Length: 244
Image 1 (cartoon, rainbow, N blue to C red):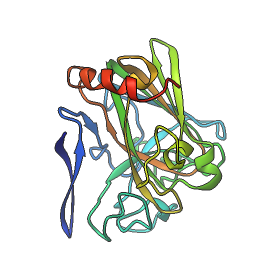
Image 2: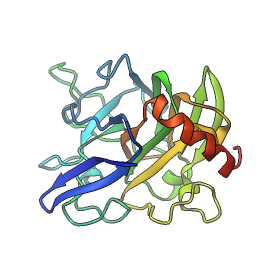
Image 3: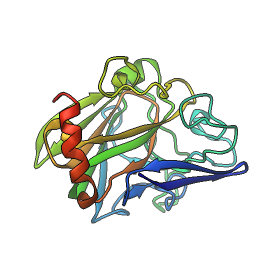
C-alpha cells in the first residue's frame, strides 16, 4: 500500500493509504453545480436516475463552498463524525457527486444556479461505467443516515451481469465481511469506505458500479486501481470473503 492520497487543510497534510497505482477520481476539476456530461470519458462514464423529478441530473457539489447552500450538511470540514472527521480542518473532500433536486440553470452554462441534493427517499442512482474493468472499488460517503442509509447500496456488474450487491448497512454491521468499526454514519458525517475487491464475487473486475442512493447524500474519491496492480491481491481476497 502506498500513501497515495493526501488531503490538504489548515492543520497540514493528512495521508490516507490507498492501493498502489490507484486511479482516484476526486471530481475537483468540477465547479460547484457543474452538470456531469462527458467530463471523465472515455475512462469513466457517469449517468444517473432520479425517479422523483422529470430530469436525471448528476452534478458536482463543492463541500468547501464558501457561502450558504441549500444543503449545509454536505459542507465541511469540520465534519460531525465519521472516519474522515479526523480534525476540524484537516480532511477536505472537495467536490463530490450528488443527484440534483433541481435543474435551474438560468444562463444555460451547464452549471446549476443553486445545487442541492435530492432529498426524497429513495433519491435515485449514480451509474458508473468504466472503459476497462477495475479490480476494486472504494468511495467516500457524505451525510448518510437512518432510512437513507438503509435504502442505499452498491451494485457491481461485469458485461451486463450483476455480480452482487453490498448494502451500506453492512459497513456498520458486526459480523459482515464489510464491517469497518471506523465507519460512523449520521447527519453531516464523512466516511471512507475501503475498496471492495471483485474477488469477493469470484470475478477479476467490474466494468460498472451503480450507487443506489437512499436519500440526501454525496459521493466522492472513487478508488479504482489499474487492473494489473490489483489482480494478484484479489485472488487472495476471494478466499477470505464469502461469495455474495
